[in-house]
Length: 447
Ligand SMILES: Nc1nc2c(c(=O)[nH]1)N[C@H]1C(S)=C(S)[C@@H](COP(=O)(O)O)O[C@H]1N2
Ligand SMILES: [Mo]
Image 1: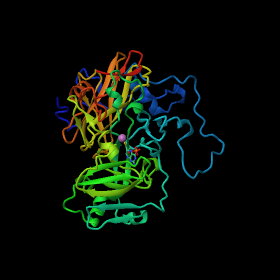
Image 2 (image 1 turned 90 degrees about the horizontal axis):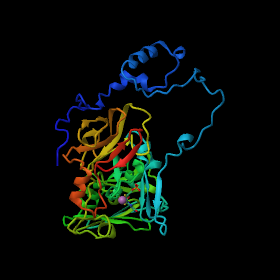
Image 3 (image 1 turned 180 degrees about the horizontal axis):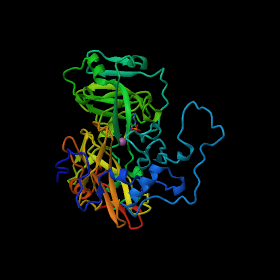
Image 4 (image 1 turned 120 degrees about the vertical axis):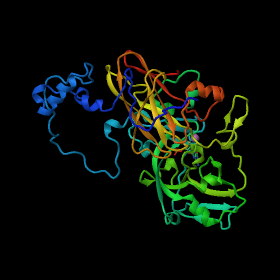
């Protein structure tokens, strides 16, 4: 596979004479071109200067003419709404929601997708974190809740929430991604749906909890042990086998999500967080950890979440989520009103480590430029990338690709299909291509 970004140390777009990607300072020089232009009489002095400066640069600004001239009223003049005990999104934004899809016969078995194309930054609001339940969201009484740690240990232990909360806590910003995310990419035809409705089984939160290694050390793990079976108390009785080393490493028993206690649908009151590992291993409503010397071979690691290879053999225990990136804007369903300069925005992440570099292309992968990585760039966390792009009004194909700090590169779709065959279902992480037509309409294409 070709290696991207041989010199990714400079964190700025690489600009060739012909590149449509521009230095991001273009937005400083052109700022007034993107604003709603006010009639001259309403402008302050400095704005006039900026407007005339920008006017020399680009005949295709994105401003719209607001028509004849009134400055907005300085205030509404009436008292606003009162206080609320718990905030909601602004009324006009309440269409930014998770789409849901579930099994008609088992309504609790399904998913909801994070609307990635409508969000900015790297944190997913808790109410928009994607969901994957195998049999619904259980109601858990925090007073009755207990976590049991047993099996090949010197001292089996049981914790209630008050006991867990006395251990030192750790907070980390981490993505959680379902192994089935983006699996529409295996379809023969590109699915025409918004980015989040195809790739939104991934979200990123600040998780706060107890490092599991502390509890394992207290229980005293038997030297013969090599696996831990984690169980949830939901009706699906979800169970997975996890290598002990990961649980003695960076595993967290999360109690808080984005500063507040876990949402019910994300595992209240306790869930396992395994940085970078596939979603199904991160057991929600976690109530039992059994230390053993062998995997349990549950449904979710045999019939499901195993990956059929072209030769008919299957990979099992494919824990780490590969490097992935996605342009969230512009993306399917959006429309570029006119030629001009746009900021290409997207997300990148990898289960192996941090994002080292993201490149963007506007010609379907023939030429690439470095995107800017916006700090913070954290281990196994969403990283926001941005690149200034001049659309000349001709058809274009926008792509992004990521390399992580372990040298793993996001594959092109053809390469992924060649490697994995046509039986793939999980771990689809190929480059996503958005075509822009001459009218500025975005669609999903395979390149
Ligand atoms: N107990 C339990 N844990 C579970 C599941 C479940 O159905 N039950 N689903 C798993 C799967 S397949 C995924 S992708 C993640 C989803 O986490 P989320 O719903 O918080 O996004 O939880 C995992 N943990
Ligand atoms: Mo999943």
